[in-house]
Length: 446
Image (cartoon, rainbow, N blue to C red):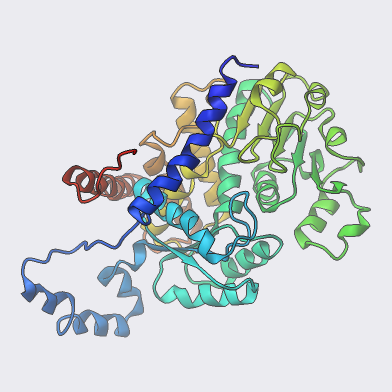
């Protein structure tokens, strides 16, 4: 155990203390600011009546020109019903607002995307789908957030099929893309291949089910995977799941080639990789179970706020590489290095959807960025303060959209890099100027 463990735990508690002071001081984290000049009051005749009628008529004649005359192409709705917020569960629409505002802030600062929190006071998946479809008139994309399973799967899959704008669920696709990126580099270090590794997936929530989807698409053999839910290993004879989540039933039928029974220890025995997004620890996974894994084991324990096992304990038990969801340990699996660039690239080429192949391209770009920085056992993923992540991921995502024929704008790699870099830089410089001028006032601890 590290000597500074108490300091690490105290450091982990500090953001919550600061949040309770700074949220009421700023009364939120985002606001609407003009992006056009107001040289005099005469300009309102251009931006509003009567001049605004001209672009209105142009859009009515050709709806696609809305992207030229308005900011729709850079607007994203962050939509939640508050049924699965962080590790807090079903806390409702109002209580979800701080998280959705924070997501909008990350979208803007990291990706230059104008995002708005939309917390809906309904838990009906059909109503959620209907509202998202109605929002297509305003927004260029939709980010679903913190929606409980199993309805989150149907909502995403339905909207991906029916919506005319890209719809993304960060808890599913975002977590999956970043996890894949980390796994790509971890396996390079331990000299193993995606197609060969045996994977134990601890937890069968939205995140791990989505991760399994993307891993299988990227080359992992489903038969080499074993998933565990609260009642044990998923296998083809799990009668309690017959009328449950369709996604779990698919996993029962396509994974676990040897029909292994039991729980977490049985799933981990002989595994090359553990990917855990389950009950917070630190004793959800025990050191003895790590010791039964294959040599040079890779362990992703990503429960928040406490991983299923402390990283140093996993290392002591023989894990070669350990990743968590926390920023105070090495190898943070952080969605914030994924979704801002993925949406930036998607919007910049006006893609109609975000495909699995686009997510894989983003994951490969993240892995390459980390490798270029000097990949090692404690650096398998880039950190969110590395500028090149966001235009780099945007380029990879946008170019894959162009390649797949789902992009309306056919930009070159250089054009896409210049466009995304300029928009992201504008967002960061704007925030800097507002702080330097005092329009965003400094917070001083009392």
